[in-house]
Image (cartoon, rainbow, N blue to C red; front, side, top):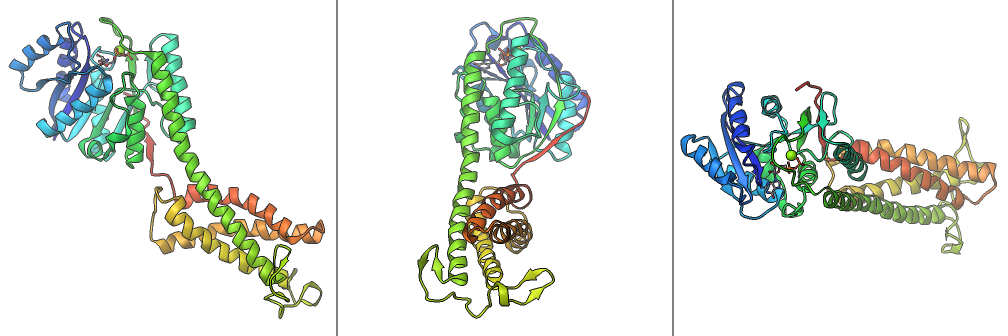
Length: 405
Ligand SMILES: Nc1nc2c(ncn2[C@@H]2O[C@H](COP(=O)(O)OP(=O)(O)O)[C@@H](O)[C@H]2O)c(=O)[nH]1
Ligand SMILES: [Mg+2]
């Protein structure tokens, strides 16, 4: 197995030799791994290139790639691509070139890849992790994490803006790079790549990392522009998620109208107050006063009509949710299993609707259509949450690992 550690650099002449040495020293803790270091440099003018090229001439495990353009995303993506194409890397790692990340954590992270995770995220914000930067940088890291959690709806991940990661070549090949703003001049690649990994159904875990401030050289981070990019990216992610809820509402609304029409025709022969048939379609079923009783329920025309119209709307909802609303979410099990689950979960909603119709008519003397409308709205929210938490789950496998680095 070949592991290529990609270190993106821009003007890191004071750090580069030491970080390469420290990464290579981890070979002893990475048994069975063929460890390589790739420096993906944005054409530094401070002599970083000369130092790396000199080392690579004597050590075949060290490589230099001039990505020419500026940008951390350019360095990372072009570097990973090169590691896969040129060196046939099986596992890809990335860390900063200023010694802020401790290479000693690398073997811990690789261990999780061996256990079957697709991506290991180095986190400063989980127990055991530390962020030893100034307060405004710590605020940025924490604020971004909270914002991304809320905007993306991914509560299993603690840090979003970390650069220390290890992932499989397989995941890298699966990720849709056209959706990532990797040519950006800010570090938006970090959260964006994580987002893309989640979208690619990656199994993710986290390992705590201690981030120390650089001792030499200077930071190239542009925190204000980066913050704006994080906000913009989260907003886009939120819009995509809202689209799902809008689709759910559309299906729910259409289903309400078909439900109301069926109920009206069966119970009164009317669509709302417009008479369609001179008598109810279920005119042979007696009304309340003459109806037979089952325990405490009157098996009257309103009751039977409600049951039929609700059942039909369950089928209507399922067909549209499975093929449209939740199309891009996980479709676990066979369609029959999902339909069975949907029916089971839907019991809650019709019970709410039925109770609402009966209470509205019998207790509050309201029209049954009002009872149905109230029941549909309450049932809608109930259903949405059961749907996304049980039937069409998110494509996320997030398992925050509880380890000390
Ligand atoms: N290839 C490449 N690497 C960059 C660029 N800008 C920053 N880096 C590297 O990204 C890592 C983190 O950058 P740094 O300036 O230390 O940001 P900070 O740690 O967030 O303050 C370092 O290894 C930098 O050399 C760039 O434009 N191109
Ligand atoms: Mg740094």
